[in-house]
Image (cartoon, rainbow, N blue to C red):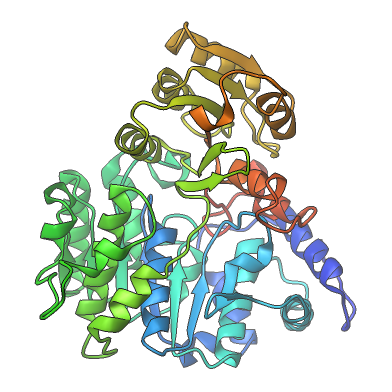
Length: 459
């Protein structure tokens, strides 16, 4: 099937074209991405990258690296996925979303260059980003993998450093059913002689990363997250600084984010000779970092506090549990939960249900959604004392939570929205925190019939 566009397209037409690319399947591998990049003039050869893989924390670590290097005066490209609301979130320069007109132009030019060859959405978006970053003359690109690493479309680049945040169970049906297999896929981004930094500390997974780094003569720096973020940053106190570490200024909540920051700072330290960054820029960069949808706390005018967190696997859920226990130990909680069917939704329900006095189960706006009635059944078994209601939409859950006179007072109750980044994106739209982009969240979709390593995204 070949999708055609005229040479002069609108943004809406470009988005529709991208949506149509989800119809295409491809074999695991990098051939299609390399071919399209070559047709685009191999823009990756004009750029410098920090390539980031891992199970959780990739986006946050990327956001921190971007913010630090931008504070140091560099022009920084940022490529991440999935997007929460708008496709434009995936491609940013100095944290400015790629303009709509540039999306339309790039789609038109790359479609013409591709000449109808089958390519997945993620492969196409990867080359769009490369072309745009090269045109923008970015000094550095923070480059997040989509899925895995070894066969991910982003793996056509040779970076300054390879970063592996951590290894946990997620996407087992494609990455493997053991941590060792998953680690091997993530460690596929390691290149010969290129330094590697990792916060992975599960022994069997770390052993795989160490083995691959050794085989490729790639210098490996390990962060021991079990010792805490302070121990993870050598010489973390700046000379003459009144504060122990720039990590103290990090605005992102959660102890896990401090570990992500320790990882980012270690990467900056490893690359100091190639890209010098002074202490004030590091502090300013971490203090100014922004990454929505991850333990994001929103307070409405009536005092209602809403915590948005895209936890969608067991490791992410455990991080959320720790954060709730630390930051909201005595607060009554309402849980709004929606999970994708291909996640460990039974275990996710079992972990989260006991934390709430009431639970609204909602469908995720995805063909892959787990059914609310099934989730509600598991939640009732895990927390028989809670009031559990399956509703038809997130909007309906919001309406019920905001019902006049409903006890307790909103200021005395924390609403936690979690289970899927797709759900968090919908919440951001409904809360008016992000402009609504009709249909663009659907670009995160994929069909099981056409799934490839370069196409799937986390949800």
